[in-house]
Amino acid sequence: MKVNLSRQQNNKMSNEILGVQLEIVAQHSEGYFGDPAGFEELLYSTKTANSYLLVGKGGYASKYSATAVYELTRRQAQDYLIGVKGEEEAYRILPKATPKKAKTTKAAPKKAPAKKAPAKKNTTKKTTGTK
Image 1 (tube, rainbow, N blue to C red):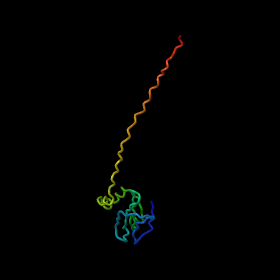
Image 2: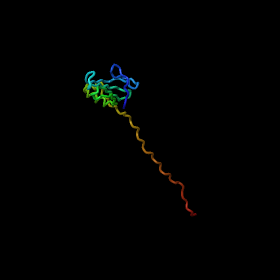
Image 3: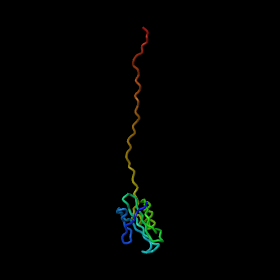
Image 4: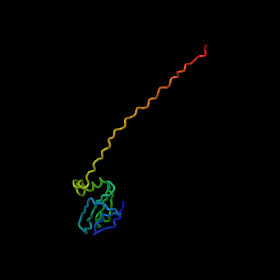
């Protein structure tokens, strides 16, 4: 997924991407300002449930020599945060998702197969031709 990040303020990445206001969940940076190997990563939550954007920008010698944008699932975002912030801090920022309980509705009772009515017996008497 490629996203245009043309808006910048005070040499920091803006949190406005494609005209949509996003919420910054976490920020991580390494190095100092002007460090060729330094970089900054911002994790944004999107309006879509369980969808996040990781945006990275850095110096020419960093892993983000060009601005990069990655779309992450909730689990991937948690794994990223565990790697940079530690497990306790990661789950404070993005709590573990609670498993959804399956709806327990009672099944409708099964209907017994319809019983066929016995064939009608012919009640007319057969008469023979004897007199």
